[in-house]
Image 1 (tube, each protein chain N blue to C red):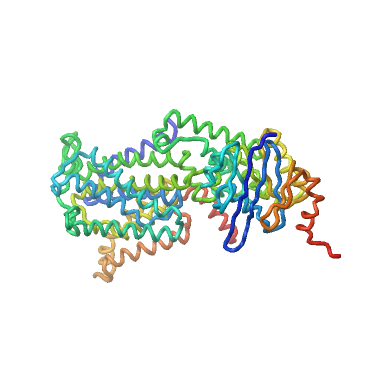
Image 2 (image 1 turned 45 degrees about the vertical axis):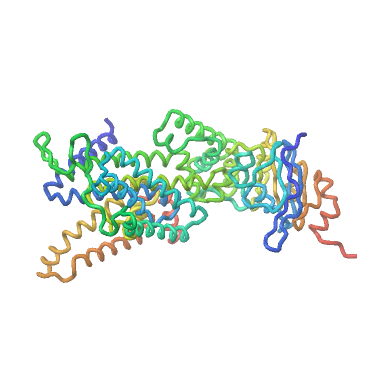
Length: 351
Length: 255
Protein backbone atom coordinates (compact mmCIF):
# COMPACT_ATOMS: atom_id res chain seq x y z
CA UNK A 1 0.00 0.00 0.00
CA UNK A 2 1.36 3.41 -0.85
CA UNK A 3 1.04 6.51 1.31
CA UNK A 4 -1.90 7.83 -0.65
CA UNK A 5 -4.02 4.73 0.01
CA UNK A 6 -3.13 4.75 3.70
CA UNK A 7 -4.02 8.43 3.95
CA UNK A 8 -7.29 7.79 2.19
CA UNK A 9 -8.21 4.97 4.56
CA UNK A 10 -7.33 7.07 7.62
CA UNK A 11 -9.48 9.97 6.41
CA UNK A 12 -12.34 7.59 5.65
CA UNK A 13 -12.12 6.03 9.13
CA UNK A 14 -12.00 9.44 10.78
CA UNK A 15 -15.05 10.59 8.84
CA UNK A 16 -16.93 7.41 9.77
CA UNK A 17 -16.08 7.74 13.46
CA UNK A 18 -16.76 11.48 13.62
CA UNK A 19 -20.49 11.41 14.48
CA UNK A 20 -19.89 8.86 17.26
CA UNK A 21 -17.27 11.13 18.80
CA UNK A 22 -19.40 14.23 18.34
CA UNK A 23 -22.39 12.51 19.93
CA UNK A 24 -20.33 12.24 23.12
CA UNK A 25 -19.77 16.03 23.05
CA UNK A 26 -23.41 16.72 22.25
CA UNK A 27 -25.92 15.81 19.56
CA UNK A 28 -26.04 19.47 18.59
CA UNK A 29 -22.54 19.06 17.16
CA UNK A 30 -23.66 16.23 14.92
CA UNK A 31 -26.40 18.50 13.60
CA UNK A 32 -23.80 21.20 13.01
CA UNK A 33 -21.67 18.68 11.12
CA UNK A 34 -24.69 17.74 9.01
CA UNK A 35 -25.41 21.35 8.12
CA UNK A 36 -21.73 21.79 7.32
CA UNK A 37 -21.94 18.92 4.84
CA UNK A 38 -24.99 20.54 3.25
CA UNK A 39 -23.01 23.73 2.87
CA UNK A 40 -20.13 21.82 1.27
CA UNK A 41 -22.74 20.45 -1.11
CA UNK A 42 -24.01 23.94 -1.92
CA UNK A 43 -20.51 25.35 -2.32
CA UNK A 44 -19.58 22.63 -4.78
CA UNK A 45 -22.70 23.41 -6.79
CA UNK A 46 -21.96 27.12 -6.79
CA UNK A 47 -18.34 26.37 -7.65
CA UNK A 48 -19.47 25.10 -11.04
CA UNK A 49 -21.22 28.38 -11.79
CA UNK A 50 -18.83 30.86 -10.15
CA UNK A 51 -15.52 29.02 -9.97
CA UNK A 52 -15.48 27.19 -13.27
CA UNK A 53 -17.74 29.16 -15.62
CA UNK A 54 -17.00 32.51 -13.96
CA UNK A 55 -20.66 33.57 -13.71
CA UNK A 56 -21.19 35.53 -10.51
CA UNK A 57 -24.40 34.22 -8.96
CA UNK A 58 -25.74 35.94 -5.84
CA UNK A 59 -29.09 34.14 -5.77
CA UNK A 60 -27.86 30.59 -5.48
CA UNK A 61 -29.81 29.86 -2.32
CA UNK A 62 -33.00 30.00 -4.42
CA UNK A 63 -32.22 26.54 -5.78
CA UNK A 64 -31.72 25.24 -2.26
CA UNK A 65 -35.16 26.68 -1.49
CA UNK A 66 -36.70 24.98 -4.52
CA UNK A 67 -35.28 21.62 -3.47
CA UNK A 68 -36.42 22.08 0.12
CA UNK A 69 -39.94 23.05 -0.86
CA UNK A 70 -40.21 20.18 -3.35
CA UNK A 71 -39.41 17.76 -0.52
CA UNK A 72 -41.75 19.59 1.85
CA UNK A 73 -44.67 19.48 -0.58
CA UNK A 74 -44.19 15.89 -1.67
CA UNK A 75 -43.64 14.42 1.79
CA UNK A 76 -45.81 16.11 4.39
CA UNK A 77 -49.43 16.26 5.53
CA UNK A 78 -49.71 19.64 3.73
CA UNK A 79 -50.89 17.97 0.53
CA UNK A 80 -51.18 14.56 2.13
CA UNK A 81 -48.39 13.25 -0.09
CA UNK A 82 -45.73 10.93 1.31
CA UNK A 83 -43.49 9.96 -1.57
CA UNK A 84 -40.22 8.05 -1.00
CA UNK A 85 -36.85 9.82 -1.19
CA UNK A 86 -35.82 8.20 -4.46
CA UNK A 87 -38.72 9.97 -6.13
CA UNK A 88 -38.41 13.31 -4.33
CA UNK A 89 -34.67 13.91 -4.63
CA UNK A 90 -34.60 13.48 -8.43
CA UNK A 91 -37.76 15.59 -8.78
CA UNK A 92 -36.19 18.25 -6.53
CA UNK A 93 -32.98 18.21 -8.56
CA UNK A 94 -34.98 18.46 -11.77
CA UNK A 95 -37.10 21.37 -10.51
CA UNK A 96 -33.98 23.23 -9.36
CA UNK A 97 -32.37 22.43 -12.70
CA UNK A 98 -35.33 23.97 -14.54
CA UNK A 99 -35.20 26.97 -12.20
CA UNK A 100 -31.50 27.29 -13.04
CA UNK A 101 -32.26 27.31 -16.75
CA UNK A 102 -35.04 29.86 -16.19
CA UNK A 103 -32.56 32.12 -14.42
CA UNK A 104 -29.85 31.41 -16.97
CA UNK A 105 -31.82 32.05 -20.15
CA UNK A 106 -32.51 35.77 -19.76
CA UNK A 107 -29.08 36.51 -18.27
CA UNK A 108 -26.93 34.93 -20.98
CA UNK A 109 -25.64 38.24 -22.25
CA UNK A 110 -24.80 39.59 -18.82
CA UNK A 111 -21.50 39.28 -17.04
CA UNK A 112 -19.89 40.36 -13.80
CA UNK A 113 -21.71 43.02 -11.81
CA UNK A 114 -24.79 43.02 -14.03
CA UNK A 115 -25.25 39.29 -13.76
CA UNK A 116 -24.75 39.53 -9.99
CA UNK A 117 -27.59 42.05 -9.67
CA UNK A 118 -30.02 39.98 -11.74
CA UNK A 119 -29.23 36.77 -9.85
CA UNK A 120 -29.61 38.61 -6.56
CA UNK A 121 -33.06 39.70 -7.70
CA UNK A 122 -33.90 36.17 -8.74
CA UNK A 123 -33.00 34.81 -5.31
CA UNK A 124 -35.28 37.34 -3.67
CA UNK A 125 -38.12 36.64 -6.12
CA UNK A 126 -38.06 32.95 -5.26
CA UNK A 127 -38.10 33.69 -1.52
CA UNK A 128 -40.96 36.18 -1.91
CA UNK A 129 -42.90 33.65 -3.95
CA UNK A 130 -42.50 31.11 -1.14
CA UNK A 131 -43.70 33.76 1.25
CA UNK A 132 -46.82 34.63 -0.72
CA UNK A 133 -47.97 31.48 -2.47
CA UNK A 134 -50.57 30.84 0.21
CA UNK A 135 -53.54 32.48 -1.52
CA UNK A 136 -55.78 31.99 -3.44
CA UNK A 137 -54.45 28.43 -3.44
CA UNK A 138 -52.40 27.49 -0.47
CA UNK A 139 -49.26 26.01 -1.99
CA UNK A 140 -46.42 27.02 0.32
CA UNK A 141 -48.36 27.98 3.44
CA UNK A 142 -46.72 31.44 3.32
CA UNK A 143 -44.45 32.70 6.08
CA UNK A 144 -45.71 30.06 8.49
CA UNK A 145 -43.86 27.47 6.44
CA UNK A 146 -44.54 23.78 6.15
CA UNK A 147 -44.31 21.60 9.23
CA UNK A 148 -44.29 17.90 10.05
CA UNK A 149 -42.26 17.02 6.95
CA UNK A 150 -41.38 13.36 6.57
CA UNK A 151 -37.82 12.45 7.38
CA UNK A 152 -35.52 10.43 5.25
CA UNK A 153 -36.28 6.72 5.37
CA UNK A 154 -34.93 3.68 3.61
CA UNK A 155 -36.98 0.49 3.88
CA UNK A 156 -38.22 0.47 7.43
CA UNK A 157 -35.25 2.41 8.81
CA UNK A 158 -36.41 5.66 10.36
CA UNK A 159 -33.75 8.36 10.40
CA UNK A 160 -35.21 10.21 13.37
CA UNK A 161 -35.12 7.53 16.02
CA UNK A 162 -32.05 6.12 17.71
CA UNK A 163 -31.00 2.64 16.68
CA UNK A 164 -28.57 0.35 18.38
CA UNK A 165 -26.26 -1.54 16.10
CA UNK A 166 -23.38 -3.71 17.31
CA UNK A 167 -23.88 -2.27 20.77
CA UNK A 168 -23.37 1.32 19.55
CA UNK A 169 -26.17 3.87 19.69
CA UNK A 170 -26.75 5.67 16.43
CA UNK A 171 -28.84 8.79 16.97
CA UNK A 172 -30.99 10.29 14.22
CA UNK A 173 -28.52 13.03 13.30
CA UNK A 174 -25.70 10.47 13.21
CA UNK A 175 -27.62 8.40 10.71
CA UNK A 176 -28.29 11.46 8.57
CA UNK A 177 -24.60 12.16 8.70
CA UNK A 178 -23.82 8.89 6.94
CA UNK A 179 -26.42 9.49 4.23
CA UNK A 180 -25.09 12.99 3.64
CA UNK A 181 -21.52 11.72 3.57
CA UNK A 182 -22.47 9.21 0.90
CA UNK A 183 -24.25 11.86 -1.18
CA UNK A 184 -21.30 14.20 -0.71
CA UNK A 185 -18.91 11.57 -1.99
CA UNK A 186 -21.02 11.36 -5.15
CA UNK A 187 -21.05 15.14 -5.55
CA UNK A 188 -17.28 15.37 -5.15
CA UNK A 189 -16.74 12.70 -7.79
CA UNK A 190 -19.14 14.45 -10.17
CA UNK A 191 -17.34 17.75 -9.62
CA UNK A 192 -13.88 16.30 -10.17
CA UNK A 193 -14.96 14.46 -13.28
CA UNK A 194 -16.69 17.47 -14.78
CA UNK A 195 -13.62 19.59 -14.16
CA UNK A 196 -11.52 17.31 -16.34
CA UNK A 197 -13.98 16.93 -19.18
CA UNK A 198 -14.90 18.56 -22.44
CA UNK A 199 -17.72 20.49 -20.77
CA UNK A 200 -15.53 21.56 -17.83
CA UNK A 201 -12.90 22.90 -20.19
CA UNK A 202 -15.58 24.81 -22.07
CA UNK A 203 -16.73 26.40 -18.78
CA UNK A 204 -13.24 27.53 -17.92
CA UNK A 205 -12.72 28.79 -21.47
CA UNK A 206 -15.82 30.97 -21.12
CA UNK A 207 -14.51 32.29 -17.81
CA UNK A 208 -11.18 33.13 -19.39
CA UNK A 209 -12.37 34.78 -22.62
CA UNK A 210 -15.91 34.47 -23.88
CA UNK A 211 -15.25 35.87 -27.36
CA UNK A 212 -12.33 33.52 -27.92
CA UNK A 213 -14.41 30.62 -26.61
CA UNK A 214 -17.11 31.39 -29.17
CA UNK A 215 -14.59 31.68 -31.97
CA UNK A 216 -13.06 28.36 -30.91
CA UNK A 217 -16.42 26.76 -31.62
CA UNK A 218 -18.09 26.66 -28.21
CA UNK A 219 -21.82 27.25 -28.17
CA UNK A 220 -21.54 29.60 -25.21
CA UNK A 221 -25.29 29.92 -24.76
CA UNK A 222 -25.84 26.21 -24.22
CA UNK A 223 -22.70 25.70 -22.19
CA UNK A 224 -23.56 28.56 -19.81
CA UNK A 225 -27.11 27.29 -19.40
CA UNK A 226 -25.64 23.90 -18.61
CA UNK A 227 -23.48 25.45 -15.87
CA UNK A 228 -26.50 27.13 -14.31
CA UNK A 229 -28.57 23.96 -14.54
CA UNK A 230 -25.85 21.68 -13.12
CA UNK A 231 -25.06 24.03 -10.25
CA UNK A 232 -28.76 24.44 -9.48
CA UNK A 233 -29.49 20.72 -9.36
CA UNK A 234 -26.80 20.27 -6.68
CA UNK A 235 -28.58 22.97 -4.71
CA UNK A 236 -31.90 21.17 -5.22
CA UNK A 237 -30.60 17.91 -3.75
CA UNK A 238 -29.08 19.71 -0.78
CA UNK A 239 -32.39 21.52 -0.22
CA UNK A 240 -34.31 18.25 -0.17
CA UNK A 241 -31.99 16.80 2.46
CA UNK A 242 -32.29 20.00 4.48
CA UNK A 243 -36.10 19.75 4.55
CA UNK A 244 -35.95 16.07 5.52
CA UNK A 245 -33.49 16.76 8.35
CA UNK A 246 -35.25 19.77 9.80
CA UNK A 247 -38.82 18.55 9.36
CA UNK A 248 -39.77 22.17 8.77
CA UNK A 249 -39.20 24.72 6.03
CA UNK A 250 -40.10 28.38 5.83
CA UNK A 251 -38.97 31.22 3.55
CA UNK A 252 -36.82 32.60 6.35
CA UNK A 253 -34.20 29.91 5.79
CA UNK A 254 -33.48 31.16 2.28
CA UNK A 255 -32.52 34.79 2.71
CA UNK A 256 -29.81 36.65 0.83
CA UNK A 257 -27.41 36.19 3.73
CA UNK A 258 -27.30 32.47 2.95
CA UNK A 259 -26.39 33.09 -0.70
CA UNK A 260 -23.60 35.38 0.42
CA UNK A 261 -22.35 32.76 2.90
CA UNK A 262 -22.14 30.10 0.20
CA UNK A 263 -20.35 32.50 -2.12
CA UNK A 264 -17.94 33.41 0.68
CA UNK A 265 -17.19 29.72 1.17
CA UNK A 266 -16.32 29.31 -2.50
CA UNK A 267 -14.17 32.45 -2.63
CA UNK A 268 -12.46 31.90 0.72
CA UNK A 269 -11.65 28.29 -0.05
CA UNK A 270 -10.29 28.95 -3.51
CA UNK A 271 -12.49 29.33 -6.54
CA UNK A 272 -12.35 26.48 -9.00
CA UNK A 273 -10.51 24.03 -6.76
CA UNK A 274 -12.83 21.34 -5.40
CA UNK A 275 -10.72 20.69 -2.29
CA UNK A 276 -10.33 24.38 -1.55
CA UNK A 277 -14.07 24.91 -1.80
CA UNK A 278 -14.68 22.01 0.58
CA UNK A 279 -12.19 23.46 3.06
CA UNK A 280 -13.81 26.89 2.80
CA UNK A 281 -17.29 25.50 3.39
CA UNK A 282 -16.22 23.45 6.41
CA UNK A 283 -14.34 26.35 7.94
CA UNK A 284 -17.14 28.88 7.50
CA UNK A 285 -19.66 26.38 8.86
CA UNK A 286 -17.71 25.37 11.94
CA UNK A 287 -15.96 28.57 13.01
CA UNK A 288 -19.12 30.58 13.81
CA UNK A 289 -20.56 27.62 15.72
CA UNK A 290 -17.33 27.15 17.60
CA UNK A 291 -17.35 30.83 18.51
CA UNK A 292 -20.97 30.54 19.61
CA UNK A 293 -19.91 28.08 22.29
CA UNK A 294 -16.71 29.79 23.34
CA UNK A 295 -17.31 33.54 23.25
CA UNK A 296 -19.48 33.59 26.37
CA UNK A 297 -17.41 31.37 28.69
CA UNK A 298 -14.16 33.08 27.66
CA UNK A 299 -15.55 36.51 28.51
CA UNK A 300 -16.84 35.27 31.84
CA UNK A 301 -13.46 33.74 32.67
CA UNK A 302 -11.58 36.90 31.70
CA UNK A 303 -13.81 39.65 33.04
CA UNK A 304 -16.14 37.83 35.36
CA UNK A 305 -19.16 39.07 33.45
CA UNK A 306 -20.43 39.50 29.87
CA UNK A 307 -18.84 42.54 28.24
CA UNK A 308 -20.13 42.21 24.69
CA UNK A 309 -23.18 40.32 23.49
CA UNK A 310 -21.97 36.90 22.30
CA UNK A 311 -23.88 37.16 19.00
CA UNK A 312 -22.32 40.54 18.17
CA UNK A 313 -18.81 39.53 19.11
CA UNK A 314 -19.10 36.25 17.28
CA UNK A 315 -19.91 37.92 13.96
CA UNK A 316 -17.26 40.57 14.61
CA UNK A 317 -14.51 38.00 15.07
CA UNK A 318 -15.82 36.08 12.10
CA UNK A 319 -15.83 39.15 9.87
CA UNK A 320 -12.35 40.16 10.93
CA UNK A 321 -11.08 36.67 10.22
CA UNK A 322 -12.59 36.82 6.73
CA UNK A 323 -11.02 40.20 6.00
CA UNK A 324 -7.60 39.01 7.21
CA UNK A 325 -7.81 35.83 5.16
CA UNK A 326 -8.63 37.69 2.00
CA UNK A 327 -5.88 40.19 2.72
CA UNK A 328 -3.18 37.58 3.11
CA UNK A 329 -4.51 34.83 0.86
CA UNK A 330 -6.43 36.69 -1.82
CA UNK A 331 -6.79 33.66 -4.09
CA UNK A 332 -8.35 31.65 -1.27
CA UNK A 333 -6.95 29.25 1.28
CA UNK A 334 -6.40 26.48 -1.22
CA UNK A 335 -6.63 27.96 -4.69
CA UNK A 336 -6.72 26.28 -8.04
CA UNK A 337 -3.11 25.73 -9.12
CA UNK A 338 -3.38 28.27 -11.90
CA UNK A 339 -4.68 31.03 -9.64
CA UNK A 340 -1.93 30.27 -7.19
CA UNK A 341 0.68 30.96 -9.87
CA UNK A 342 -1.09 34.15 -10.82
CA UNK A 343 -1.08 35.51 -7.29
CA UNK A 344 2.54 34.47 -6.85
CA UNK A 345 3.45 36.60 -9.81
CA UNK A 346 1.59 39.56 -8.44
CA UNK A 347 3.64 39.31 -5.29
CA UNK A 348 6.86 39.27 -7.29
CA UNK A 349 5.67 42.30 -9.19
CA UNK A 350 4.96 44.08 -5.90
CA UNK A 351 8.39 43.38 -4.54
CA UNK B 1 -8.92 25.84 -58.88
CA UNK B 2 -12.27 25.49 -57.16
CA UNK B 3 -13.81 28.27 -55.15
CA UNK B 4 -13.90 27.72 -51.37
CA UNK B 5 -15.46 30.95 -50.18
CA UNK B 6 -17.44 33.56 -52.00
CA UNK B 7 -18.54 36.70 -50.17
CA UNK B 8 -21.20 38.67 -52.01
CA UNK B 9 -21.93 42.35 -51.43
CA UNK B 10 -21.20 42.34 -47.69
CA UNK B 11 -22.19 45.62 -46.04
CA UNK B 12 -21.87 46.77 -42.46
CA UNK B 13 -22.61 50.11 -40.84
CA UNK B 14 -21.66 51.34 -37.37
CA UNK B 15 -23.98 54.25 -36.66
CA UNK B 16 -23.27 56.63 -39.53
CA UNK B 17 -20.01 55.01 -40.55
CA UNK B 18 -20.11 52.67 -43.51
CA UNK B 19 -17.45 50.18 -42.40
CA UNK B 20 -18.03 47.81 -45.31
CA UNK B 21 -19.73 48.66 -48.58
CA UNK B 22 -20.71 45.88 -50.98
CA UNK B 23 -17.53 43.93 -50.48
CA UNK B 24 -17.38 40.85 -52.69
CA UNK B 25 -14.43 38.54 -52.88
CA UNK B 26 -13.63 35.01 -53.86
CA UNK B 27 -11.15 32.73 -52.13
CA UNK B 28 -10.02 29.62 -53.95
CA UNK B 29 -9.12 26.33 -52.33
CA UNK B 30 -5.53 25.95 -51.10
CA UNK B 31 -4.48 29.50 -51.76
CA UNK B 32 -3.09 32.10 -49.42
CA UNK B 33 -5.34 35.08 -49.82
CA UNK B 34 -4.26 38.43 -48.45
CA UNK B 35 -6.52 41.23 -47.32
CA UNK B 36 -4.72 44.52 -46.93
CA UNK B 37 -5.59 48.16 -46.66
CA UNK B 38 -4.73 51.28 -44.67
CA UNK B 39 -5.77 51.54 -41.02
CA UNK B 40 -9.52 51.69 -40.61
CA UNK B 41 -10.19 50.29 -44.06
CA UNK B 42 -12.53 47.63 -42.68
CA UNK B 43 -10.32 44.55 -42.75
CA UNK B 44 -11.03 43.40 -39.20
CA UNK B 45 -14.70 44.32 -39.58
CA UNK B 46 -14.84 42.03 -42.60
CA UNK B 47 -13.21 39.30 -40.51
CA UNK B 48 -15.67 39.75 -37.70
CA UNK B 49 -18.64 39.62 -40.05
CA UNK B 50 -17.23 36.55 -41.77
CA UNK B 51 -16.74 34.73 -38.47
CA UNK B 52 -20.12 35.66 -37.04
CA UNK B 53 -18.95 38.07 -34.32
CA UNK B 54 -20.75 41.00 -35.99
CA UNK B 55 -24.14 40.79 -37.65
CA UNK B 56 -23.95 41.98 -41.26
CA UNK B 57 -26.42 44.49 -42.70
CA UNK B 58 -26.49 42.94 -46.17
CA UNK B 59 -24.82 40.34 -48.30
CA UNK B 60 -24.20 36.62 -48.06
CA UNK B 61 -21.35 34.17 -47.96
CA UNK B 62 -21.11 30.88 -49.81
CA UNK B 63 -18.68 28.47 -48.20
CA UNK B 64 -17.74 25.11 -49.71
CA UNK B 65 -20.75 25.29 -51.99
CA UNK B 66 -23.28 26.06 -49.25
CA UNK B 67 -24.64 29.30 -47.82
CA UNK B 68 -22.78 30.04 -44.59
CA UNK B 69 -24.89 30.64 -41.48
CA UNK B 70 -23.46 33.80 -39.95
CA UNK B 71 -25.72 33.69 -36.91
CA UNK B 72 -23.10 32.92 -34.30
CA UNK B 73 -19.37 32.27 -34.21
CA UNK B 74 -19.62 28.64 -33.15
CA UNK B 75 -21.71 27.85 -36.24
CA UNK B 76 -19.01 29.38 -38.40
CA UNK B 77 -16.39 27.27 -36.63
CA UNK B 78 -18.60 24.24 -37.13
CA UNK B 79 -18.83 24.99 -40.85
CA UNK B 80 -15.04 25.00 -41.11
CA UNK B 81 -13.71 28.54 -40.70
CA UNK B 82 -11.31 29.12 -37.82
CA UNK B 83 -9.71 32.40 -36.86
CA UNK B 84 -7.11 34.08 -34.72
CA UNK B 85 -7.30 37.56 -33.27
CA UNK B 86 -5.31 40.71 -33.93
CA UNK B 87 -4.62 41.12 -30.22
CA UNK B 88 -4.07 37.53 -29.15
CA UNK B 89 -7.01 36.04 -27.25
CA UNK B 90 -5.98 32.90 -25.43
CA UNK B 91 -7.39 31.27 -22.30
CA UNK B 92 -4.59 32.70 -20.20
CA UNK B 93 -5.07 30.57 -17.09
CA UNK B 94 -5.29 27.30 -18.97
CA UNK B 95 -2.25 25.37 -20.12
CA UNK B 96 -1.16 25.47 -23.74
CA UNK B 97 -2.40 21.91 -24.14
CA UNK B 98 -5.80 22.73 -22.61
CA UNK B 99 -6.15 25.71 -24.96
CA UNK B 100 -5.80 23.43 -27.95
CA UNK B 101 -8.08 20.83 -26.36
CA UNK B 102 -10.81 23.49 -26.14
CA UNK B 103 -10.51 23.84 -29.91
CA UNK B 104 -11.57 20.19 -30.25
CA UNK B 105 -14.90 21.02 -28.56
CA UNK B 106 -16.75 21.60 -31.79
CA UNK B 107 -15.68 18.26 -33.29
CA UNK B 108 -16.48 16.15 -30.22
CA UNK B 109 -19.69 15.45 -28.33
CA UNK B 110 -19.23 14.02 -24.85
CA UNK B 111 -21.77 15.66 -22.57
CA UNK B 112 -22.32 16.00 -18.86
CA UNK B 113 -23.56 12.46 -18.34
CA UNK B 114 -20.72 10.94 -20.30
CA UNK B 115 -18.27 12.88 -18.13
CA UNK B 116 -19.98 11.96 -14.85
CA UNK B 117 -20.27 8.27 -15.67
CA UNK B 118 -16.88 8.14 -17.42
CA UNK B 119 -18.33 5.96 -20.17
CA UNK B 120 -15.99 4.04 -22.45
CA UNK B 121 -16.93 6.36 -25.31
CA UNK B 122 -16.17 9.45 -23.25
CA UNK B 123 -12.78 8.15 -22.14
CA UNK B 124 -11.85 7.20 -25.70
CA UNK B 125 -12.90 10.62 -26.96
CA UNK B 126 -10.98 12.39 -24.21
CA UNK B 127 -7.83 10.43 -25.06
CA UNK B 128 -8.27 11.28 -28.74
CA UNK B 129 -8.71 14.98 -27.92
CA UNK B 130 -5.49 14.97 -25.91
CA UNK B 131 -3.58 13.10 -28.59
CA UNK B 132 -4.73 15.46 -31.34
CA UNK B 133 -3.93 18.52 -29.20
CA UNK B 134 -0.41 17.20 -28.57
CA UNK B 135 0.07 16.60 -32.28
CA UNK B 136 -1.01 20.14 -33.08
CA UNK B 137 1.32 21.67 -30.48
CA UNK B 138 4.09 19.66 -32.05
CA UNK B 139 3.03 20.82 -35.52
CA UNK B 140 3.27 24.50 -34.65
CA UNK B 141 6.52 23.84 -32.80
CA UNK B 142 5.65 24.48 -29.15
CA UNK B 143 5.23 20.91 -27.86
CA UNK B 144 7.77 21.63 -25.12
CA UNK B 145 5.47 24.28 -23.61
CA UNK B 146 2.40 22.01 -23.43
CA UNK B 147 2.13 22.13 -19.63
CA UNK B 148 2.72 25.87 -19.24
CA UNK B 149 -0.04 28.40 -18.74
CA UNK B 150 -0.84 30.18 -21.98
CA UNK B 151 -0.04 33.59 -20.57
CA UNK B 152 3.46 32.51 -19.60
CA UNK B 153 4.34 31.82 -23.24
CA UNK B 154 6.42 34.27 -25.25
CA UNK B 155 4.64 36.49 -27.74
CA UNK B 156 5.62 34.43 -30.75
CA UNK B 157 4.64 31.19 -29.01
CA UNK B 158 1.26 32.68 -28.08
CA UNK B 159 0.63 33.42 -31.75
CA UNK B 160 1.53 29.83 -32.56
CA UNK B 161 -0.69 28.53 -29.79
CA UNK B 162 -3.61 30.54 -31.13
CA UNK B 163 -3.04 29.01 -34.56
CA UNK B 164 -2.89 25.52 -33.01
CA UNK B 165 -6.20 26.14 -31.22
CA UNK B 166 -7.75 27.30 -34.50
CA UNK B 167 -6.39 24.24 -36.29
CA UNK B 168 -7.94 21.99 -33.64
CA UNK B 169 -11.39 22.89 -34.97
CA UNK B 170 -10.45 21.16 -38.26
CA UNK B 171 -10.99 24.19 -40.46
CA UNK B 172 -10.99 24.31 -44.24
CA UNK B 173 -10.25 28.01 -44.11
CA UNK B 174 -7.89 29.50 -41.54
CA UNK B 175 -8.33 33.25 -41.08
CA UNK B 176 -5.35 35.02 -39.48
CA UNK B 177 -5.83 38.58 -38.27
CA UNK B 178 -2.46 40.35 -38.42
CA UNK B 179 -0.42 37.38 -37.22
CA UNK B 180 2.89 39.18 -37.70
CA UNK B 181 1.91 42.28 -35.72
CA UNK B 182 4.56 43.00 -33.12
CA UNK B 183 6.87 40.22 -34.29
CA UNK B 184 10.56 40.70 -34.94
CA UNK B 185 12.18 39.65 -38.22
CA UNK B 186 13.10 36.15 -37.02
CA UNK B 187 9.63 35.48 -35.67
CA UNK B 188 8.05 36.78 -38.88
CA UNK B 189 10.22 34.48 -40.97
CA UNK B 190 9.23 31.53 -38.80
CA UNK B 191 5.56 32.49 -39.11
CA UNK B 192 5.88 32.68 -42.86
CA UNK B 193 7.33 29.18 -42.91
CA UNK B 194 4.44 27.94 -40.75
CA UNK B 195 1.77 29.47 -43.02
CA UNK B 196 3.43 28.04 -46.11
CA UNK B 197 3.50 24.65 -44.41
CA UNK B 198 -0.23 24.93 -43.68
CA UNK B 199 -0.97 25.59 -47.30
CA UNK B 200 1.25 22.71 -48.37
CA UNK B 201 -0.91 20.52 -46.12
CA UNK B 202 -3.99 21.54 -48.09
CA UNK B 203 -5.38 24.36 -45.96
CA UNK B 204 -6.70 27.63 -47.36
CA UNK B 205 -5.48 30.73 -45.55
CA UNK B 206 -7.01 34.18 -45.36
CA UNK B 207 -4.48 36.68 -44.10
CA UNK B 208 -5.00 40.22 -42.89
CA UNK B 209 -1.67 41.93 -42.63
CA UNK B 210 -0.06 45.29 -42.27
CA UNK B 211 3.38 44.06 -43.23
CA UNK B 212 3.09 44.63 -46.99
CA UNK B 213 6.37 42.87 -47.68
CA UNK B 214 5.13 39.72 -45.95
CA UNK B 215 1.80 39.81 -47.79
CA UNK B 216 3.35 40.39 -51.19
CA UNK B 217 5.84 37.58 -50.70
CA UNK B 218 3.46 35.06 -49.20
CA UNK B 219 0.06 35.51 -50.82
CA UNK B 220 -1.16 34.06 -54.08
CA UNK B 221 -3.75 36.78 -54.45
CA UNK B 222 -4.43 39.99 -52.60
CA UNK B 223 -7.49 42.17 -52.13
CA UNK B 224 -7.21 45.78 -51.03
CA UNK B 225 -9.84 47.52 -48.93
CA UNK B 226 -10.08 51.28 -48.63
CA UNK B 227 -12.84 53.08 -46.73
CA UNK B 228 -14.87 49.88 -46.62
CA UNK B 229 -14.71 49.23 -50.35
CA UNK B 230 -12.68 46.75 -52.30
CA UNK B 231 -10.49 48.69 -54.70
CA UNK B 232 -8.38 45.85 -56.09
CA UNK B 233 -8.13 42.06 -56.16
CA UNK B 234 -5.40 40.28 -58.07
CA UNK B 235 -1.96 38.66 -57.86
CA UNK B 236 0.49 40.72 -55.77
CA UNK B 237 2.49 42.03 -58.72
CA UNK B 238 -0.59 43.55 -60.36
CA UNK B 239 -2.00 44.95 -57.14
CA UNK B 240 1.28 46.59 -56.28
CA UNK B 241 1.25 48.50 -59.57
CA UNK B 242 -2.41 49.53 -59.32
CA UNK B 243 -2.66 53.33 -59.17
CA UNK B 244 -5.74 53.18 -56.93
CA UNK B 245 -3.83 51.11 -54.41
CA UNK B 246 -0.86 53.43 -54.46
CA UNK B 247 -3.21 56.35 -53.95
CA UNK B 248 -4.93 54.67 -51.02
CA UNK B 249 -1.62 54.06 -49.29
CA UNK B 250 0.30 57.20 -50.24
CA UNK B 251 -2.37 59.73 -51.14
CA UNK B 252 -2.71 61.49 -54.50
CA UNK B 253 0.51 62.82 -55.93
CA UNK B 254 0.70 66.59 -56.14
CA UNK B 255 1.11 68.03 -59.60
